Length: 162
Image (tube, rainbow, N blue to C red; front, side, top):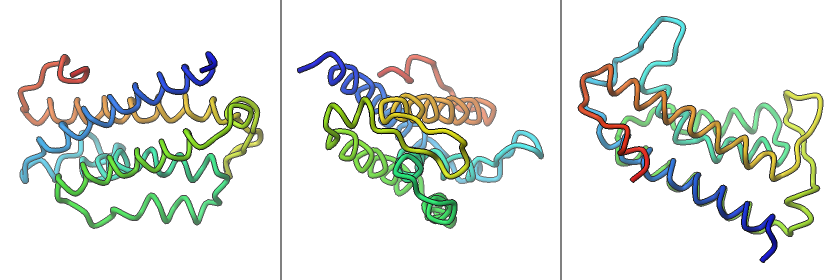
């Protein structure tokens, strides 16, 4: 296996850690947490969780050069969902779709195939998109962790790495 494929796999392992620990955070959401919004100009907890669950899927659509309408359709697909188990399952499914695409790429495509987001002026290689998705998912996992802490959940940072 080449070094580049090892890096791809390491990034997928890290992404799976974010998904697994994100699923655990989602499952902690109580009915009384659903109305939480830290500030008027921030996402509510339901908006955050729905977005978080779809990060791999929406980023995949973006990196496959989906247009704004196609990406919007992905991002709105959980708009009415409030069951933590279904949201956790949606995150897992989103990851599995993303992983299937990434692992289907040839080494050459992974390293050199450039695609452009509908909102961007220039493109990124698929490996660059993989790094972007990892940071995107971890950003929102951190937000969810903080939202739950602010709602009085007893959380320890170590749960983010188990």
